Length: 372
Image 1 (cartoon, helix red, strand yellow):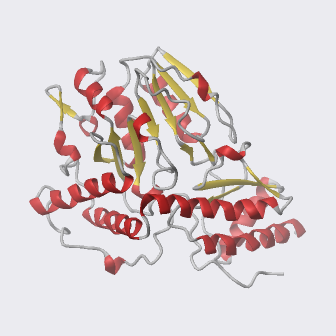
Image 2: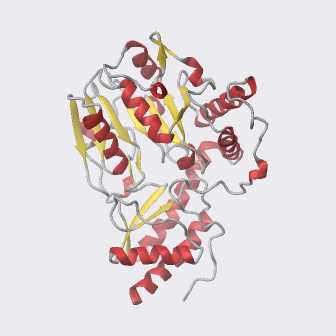
Image 3: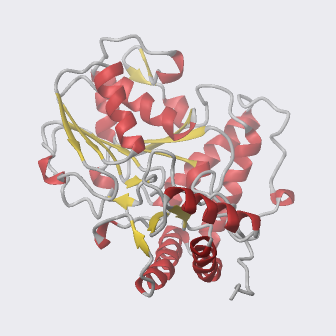
């Protein structure tokens, strides 16, 4: 039978992801709109976003946070172009975005001291191959495959190289071993339902030391430059952004940071995401027609949950369209490069009750499509 209860919020897109519960545009502070982002007011608002990010995430002393252009993609590429080349590189890739960084490193930067460790969708490469003497590039959570790194035990605490981690789907939803991560990137719209193409760049003191002691042999675009005269441009990490940000988007980010803080901080944010995953695990465990793409339970993502369905690819698209037309789940089709299936965002801004209410609709849609 057709389910009666519907999710109160049908937005399960993996990016931009759902706004926080209770979000209202009327709650946004707008005093900085129409003002220069380089005014004392504008820089103060940006500096507040940076400070609150550091405090809520509990970053180690000496770690710097900056707001950079072009979303998480821009933040990762800024790091790759600015930091790589000093040491050999180990790149771990198992889904679309990691393979994109592999292309950047081998085809665009044309580095010749590169070790590549790849795995197909649903799997992880052998992380034990990471060489502590090399720079390491990897995604923490494969947004398009639903496969995450289970922990940071494979990263040497005595490493000589840097770890460059694309964590856009993991920050505020998964435990991260900050002391083992030298560069971490994410975007507001992927993590907390934010708006606009803004990237967050977190640097350890070791990454700063690399920036100040190493000059890449290739030219750097202006939006990638973090040093001047061999010294870090500290203003980038104090609210003087490289290019013009949307102050409305900054206000939106601050609003959601306040919600994270008021609802229990990053620990509760992680628990919320984990509870959402558990709701799907319970449903999948009772169903014989739907499965996790992640082959190993320990590597299942709690944010971008990727599922396969015992239907032909065209039928899965019908199922996705049916759920969308019913207004119970928007934008949950698998990523275009991934195997056919469903991708349900279960990050901290999604309510557990909505995930639970969605599950019977998945079965209903599956049965409707299969009958046809």
